Length: 385
Ligand SMILES: *Cc1c(COP(=O)(O)O)cnc(C)c1O
Image (cartoon, rainbow, N blue to C red):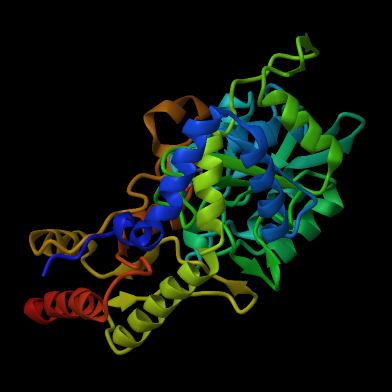
């Protein structure tokens, strides 16, 4: 039996008439960009995340760029993040004018190691009237950007305590973590700003591209409102911004889907429990470790597997959906050669990129399909002997 990694059609089937009516309404009203649909979504999304404000934009990547600029990242500043993430995390830093400075991850949660962050700041930085700067080269530290990978928040207690001590803004890359919690606080409500993607494969996906920034800070919110529309108000411009607006039709789709998000999370979490049990006695597979403070939304279900590439081929030959997130850590990407990193700089990220494989976890999977995925993986190790 073939099992897809993700089948969004199944998610849309029960709400297809609601989605069609959004499309019809857009055609009738000819309000296509921003407008009341987007404003309603912004209110509902802020309430969902537990923040004062939410500002819609064109993608998760843009949300990161806008948030980094709005919290005060200036050209040349370092932004501290990890190399084991989707490319856009570091790509956005560069597009915001900053320079990614990578720190390694924890081997069990794949999120930034807060002790490395603390050590790096203590060893390399000092506080000046320009903010926190690198002692060696005077580069400012513009922001720290934890990535909540695969649906689990990074250790926000430690990260916020370190960053509050140093007075460095924190931009959460929550693109894979909408609705995920850390001790009852939702992703995007713990840092200075939080960034979300509505790419179709995220837990809350639009029918196209979309993004959102959350914050409690009214000045940051207003700066993003301005930056997303050419850095101005009306035709008066104080700075050069972007064209990064959210379409009314996508906002309408997202409003419909936001109302179902909690029940969709439940489906993914049920499937995660299924795998947890299924692989419990299988020494070749390590299931995801979720910290006791964390409530994961399992945007991906990512296991560590012995002979990962063998398993990958075995599953592909049998049409079981799977993918490697992520095969090449960002410090080893060609476009970041100029940053001067080399192989061996981030041993945990490098090791993990050779061990991980993500398997189907979307909420609409049937028990039969889950059983098929689990038994095919068990078969692979049994065949190997
Ligand atoms: C998806 C994603 C992004 C980018 O979102 P887009 O909407 O595709 O631009 C950024 N960071 C992470 C961690 C992501 O998973």
